[in-house]
Image (cartoon, rainbow, N blue to C red):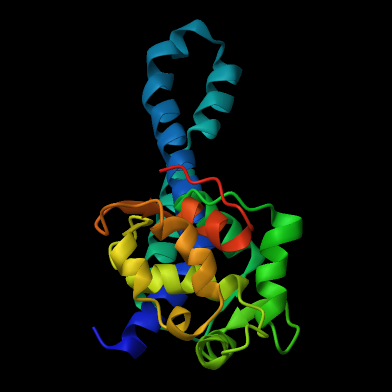
Length: 219
């Protein structure tokens, strides 16, 4: 995979997180409706004719079909946009991404800050131009002057091809910016405690190490 394709991979992963969450929610709703539809005939004899009409409406097949079509449309949209970088990464996307990555960030304080640092046009989201520009600026910043919260997360994901949200110490050591940056000192808080460069570090542990003076390392 080329470096450009890898950047696209991470951008689209983050930008589609709220869409994937919506699919999961609708699929749960569909399963509940389907279960209701299957169970109703077994209990209809217990109700009056008027009640049976109401219950039938609640489990109406048309409602199931409409929901199924909605789910499929969203799935098709997500699949079609797997390399589409015309969208933006929103706060909602980042909220759902953090849940999937098991990264403890608060929506109001920390997630909004990630977006704000990179949102050059102030539209409330990060488009691909802003995303790529952030990477270029941070990688060339030898004085640690650029805001780098989102950058720290993205560099981890760029190395995490399987999106398991764990990387070896050796993989983290290869990150571009740290070879010529004071950020490397924070990384040493991870390395100095590891006897094996193949040891895995979670995204949460990495994030804590990069954002606190004395990180509490827990695998």
